[in-house]
Amino acid sequence: MEHEVQNPILRLLRGRGGAREKGIYSCCSANEYVIRAALRRAKASGTMVLVEATANQVNQNGGYTGMTPGDFRGFLGRIAQEEQFPAEQLLCGGDHLGPLTWQGLPEEQAMANAEELVRAYVLAGFSKIHIDTSMRVVDDDPSARLSDVVIARRGAQLCRAAEDAFARYRAEHPQAPPPVYVIGSEVPIPGGAQENEDSVTVTSPEDCEATLEEFHRAFAARGLDGAWERVVAVVVQPGVEFADESVVEYDRRAASRLTAHLKRHPNLVFEGHSTDYQPRECLKEMVEDGIAILKVGPALTFALREGLFALEQIERELYGINDFPCSHFRAVLEQAMLEDQGQWSKYYHGSVPQKRYARAFSYSDRARYYLNNPKVQDAIRTLLANLDTAGIPMALLSQYMPIQYARVHAGQLAPRAEDLLIDRVGDWIDDYLYAVT
Image (cartoon, rainbow, N blue to C red; front, side, top):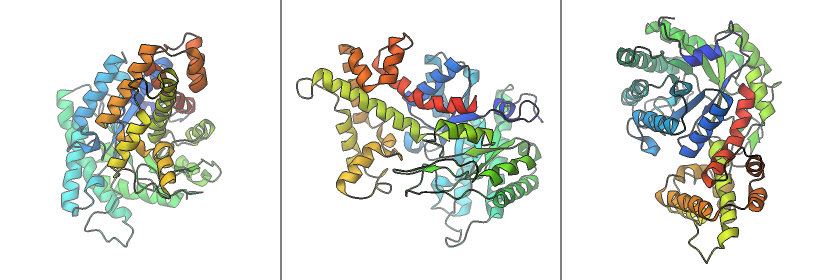
């Protein structure tokens, strides 16, 4: 390595002489409750936390969260401080960094924006960078597959921008570890499939090798040999996916040719996207098979939504629905989604009742895009305040949140509404910690 300080992700994935007996999960969310859940579980288990933001979620123009990479890093820092979580245990990553949000532009403009995006992430101190140039831009042939050569050339262009930005960043932060890189992209697009599927085609070893060879060649052409040594993972499709109402579970036999291919690349692991809703044993098998970086996002806000619905049921039992200013959380969320259909209409189909059901319960969890809506935020605050004012009877906690009931009963969890909600998200994180530790 050309730098003295080693990236902790590199140390984790290449530790013990290259053996990969453990991995790391990545919390892909900008939701404050989800992030608090990740930090609390990590604090309890003595593990690191990797939080990643996507290019359409956080970018130099604000993304759909309204945050730049610097804003997001500050947001994470504030929560970590409030949770008394060690700053050195919090790792930040950028996901799908490339021309994702500028596909309607010609290559020169799209890539210029993508370079600015990557620089913004690196200069904000993000230490894990997923370079994704797999999407077409305006001057690509829409009827032809984008070639590995083009994808790799554009990827190397972004890596060069990242390395130059890190040189600037390190001048002000001498102890900062150099970033690690992830290359490649899964199919379908980020966020889950738009159609329900029974099976998913596993990436072939030949396609994986072609990706690696072209990227290696493109990096060398840009003088990025040092950066290539910090490419820790390639994104593949190991045969897992989720959609509106379906989950394709990991089948290690179906993925065996692909995972066996890692023996040719002892310094690499696979990064698995769309691992949401996988059973914990499947997650553990994935890590054992070398899919050592597990990305999860919608499943965590799905769990958050479950917790909010459960708390609202308790609120209704305590206050009724007409005699007190209740939160009406579910109704407020539904109204927000009806008023702005841009984040779910392409995903949810069928009759009016079917779409109503999907808006609330779909695995795609398009409701997560509306949790920061001001009216929805007000409803959440009202819900939590109402429950804390009244106090939650243990019998109702047992009825609607039985796992949290057991922890409160054992003195392991405070019966505050927010703590119960965050712990409910933590139940899903536990599956990932089981897999990677």
